[in-house]
Length: 107
Length: 107
Image (cartoon, rainbow over all chains, first blue to last red; front, side, top):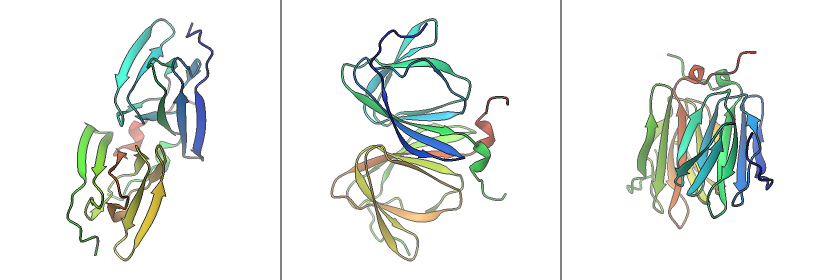
């Protein structure tokens, strides 16, 4: 089970190619992404202060974050994400579909 | 040659491990990073609207960006970056040191 709220977060696609996908997510207070699985590793960057309420299928956990705070997660995560803040929030999600497409310099 | 401005942008490290490095960069108007080379592929996410003035060693180019706008660049880029806006700006930089550490799901 995930959240029962039905206010949808709004996804705005910035870039989507073979290597990466960049999406801006906007949440009204209480809005949710809905239950989803991450098929690729991804980064999240908060555009404003806010609390992400993460439901892992069993329990919800509040994660307070500040503007600019960023983190990486590996593929395989399943969850529902709610805006647990009393104000709108937004973050950028960068999914890396092909890590090998991120080219290093020759050693 | 790069910019002659000497106001330094301020780097605040968020995370630095074997796989990735996450840095917040804050720029007063006219502040610069100084000339630098990118040894790893990287993402930039703007936290506010602003204009990045990019010096590639030969010429400067203004790049207007909006809050949340994000992009990826490959390793090997060399440049100097100035805040070309009349107000402070900030962005998050995510450098991927080890793309192979971004784990995909088994096919």
